[in-house]
Length: 485
Image 1 (cartoon, rainbow, N blue to C red):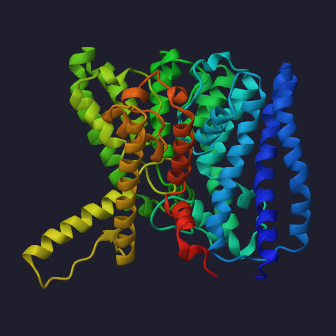
Image 2: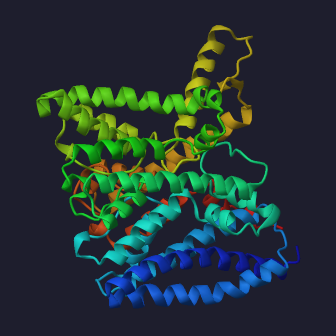
Image 3: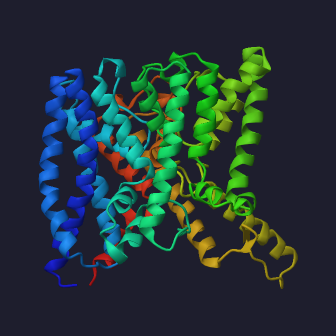
């Protein structure tokens, strides 16, 4: 592509991506108009209308002529899209008049789009409904993916669409479930919308007001976990709401390709899926272990199961919702939850973390290495979904997990430099890179990120975006080879 035209094409695509976010902002803007929240009409309306005005010419020109771009440009496009979308999402917080500094507004927006569940807000109940709605919507949009939403609504990017989706999607091996990437995006988003609507209705039946039900359904399905109440879901003290949340946290942590196969009647593919079975097995074993350790705390199996299963599902799916102060639980219970922070959900889900499939691959490869010691001349391979796995997947997983560990350690050291104790530093590092938001120590239940200095908030915002884009997409931009012609 012509070196002069290439930046113009990238700018046009970025304008279209931002335009989707600005159009979404019209929903809370309408709510603000209806409810008479004048400050929020300005805070939401100005950035939304300005960006829409800038995106329309780009959209019209793209309809006439939408040239392709290099696959390597996808990494830069996706990273810039997430940065710019976070800046756009920060504007309603910053302009709202509720005391958000620009740093806090940006971090709040990044936490939303990366569905990290962290927050700088100390009193969420003091915020207007339209701002809470926008906050929850940012989680919901980012949970499935900004690029994937754009491709589903406006399949204008041609052959470049799959490169962009691959750069944004999670998991070691990106899979196309339909021949056309736009059709795949629509399938995933329709599944996402149906599950979200079902969850909102169930929350409403459980006693929530409609706004609360919608906001909670957005964040739970995005594996975000923030609430419209200071006390979170524990404010409702409802077994029904807790059980519903457990089920949908687990559903959000499953590979969304499952739902497509379910609709197509491909039950065998679901039953034989290695990652899905491992994910449910991890939850079952961990929830059972946590429940057993909590029986002496709560005095009954029922209460221990309710709180134990909820926090297990929350940590495993990286949702970060809290209904009990787990830092008061036995040390072994806290240890189990701490380990789950570094497991995560399935690939192609809204969950963060390392992802179950990578743990499965490394576990199987470890078993093969032990066999190789006994049988030096043997030839061993891993099997995934009852098929022989590729060696390059094993290499990629090993590289990713090593890089993940290095960044956790580095981030923990940065946190320790600010004065954190070592448990808090490692817990916070694992939470931000795994897009979880809550953890132990200074980010335990009832704590937020407002306590951190600004430089640490900017650093954590970058790590959240890198973690959401699975590290490679962001870190490749810092290699000299990427910028060579």
